[in-house]
Length: 236
Image 1 (cartoon, one colour):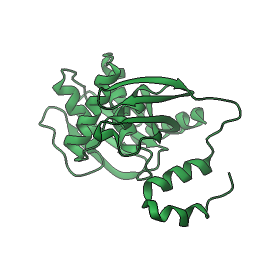
Image 2 (image 1 turned 45 degrees about the vertical axis):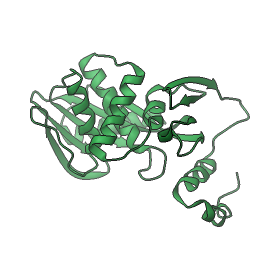
Image 3 (image 1 turned 30 degrees about the vertical axis):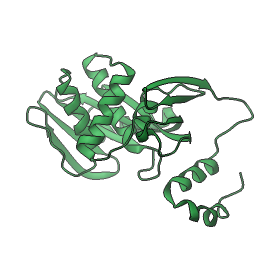
């Protein structure tokens, strides 16, 4: 499936910009198994990455401007990296916030043509915003050759969410998208910002689309309404 997505986004990039992308990176969405809504209160959470990802393709454009396009929106956005970067109250604030944080941290990014495609459904509770932020930070690493520490990278993305998107969230979403390991869950102490990876894989265990739908419902509806929706789920 990933190979097909990679081919499709490369083809889409070529149609939009008239050439092949030089870099292609991605970052995953997540589900949280334990500790809902406690990450921003310093609690312990146990998230895990999922196979839904945000993909970003790009190439240098020889200017000081980043041109942004998304497969979900028609409008092209131009971000002048040589000017002060400010939030605009739009979806691209997550990206611009990361560029701003990188620049403040001494990591300058050249002008780029960027195409974004995500299989993480927006508004689903699967952390599409964190996947977009971490994907952008991963792109900056690839373009500049400057590798960031996992915690530094996650906190840079968190600052983008706070300062540019105005969401006072905790560190969980950005850190699991940054530091997830295949076949593992993350145990994160949000008070100390320490974490470990615990194996979570067995041939008999499979996170089906029905289970993901149930987890999405738990996040999207009030707890006293969950019972009304569970009966509508397909059999797992």
